[in-house]
Image 1 (tube, one colour):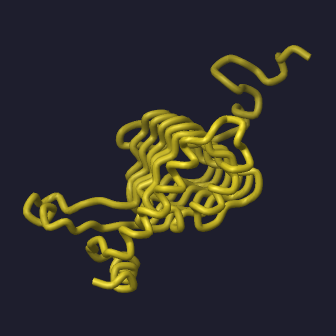
Image 2 (spheres, helix red, strand yellow; image 1 turned 30 degrees about the horizontal axis):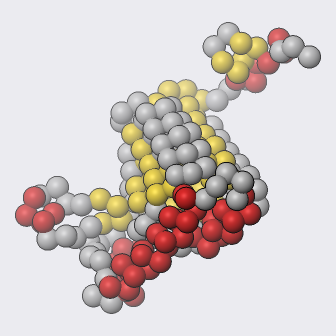
Length: 204
């Protein structure tokens, strides 16, 4: 299988296998990832440069804390102003689109790839991959796992530890395993930032 054939199979939702070209690309990007993860806190400019080298597209003012785990990098785009806390894992064999102004808690996993459930088929080494999209302004809570083919809507909030296996609408709070919509973001959220804590009761 050539690399072009591999990508065509992924795009059509078919099973695929590694190619030598693909594995060589992984090796190159993982060297950059290693340098990024090993850098000193003061080496901010170096990390900015490596982020641009690792990913397909990165907007302005994107911050990613170490450590980071990825396989491809070039399949990932990140919108401006997005903040990603430590421990992000990207199983990025296919496209991952992260919008503008998103917020990621610690230890989030975005996984575009899975394997057949049948043990004999799985042992053959084939995989499938489907894209993940995170809308502008979404907040993905700590430890959340987003599975292949999922779209998370604009300004949605995903609760910590959730396993997201279905699409989540815009402006929706969703939690659980499997992750399910809990409620819409509403006017109450403009008054209260946490439980009974009001925005207008903050000390000046």
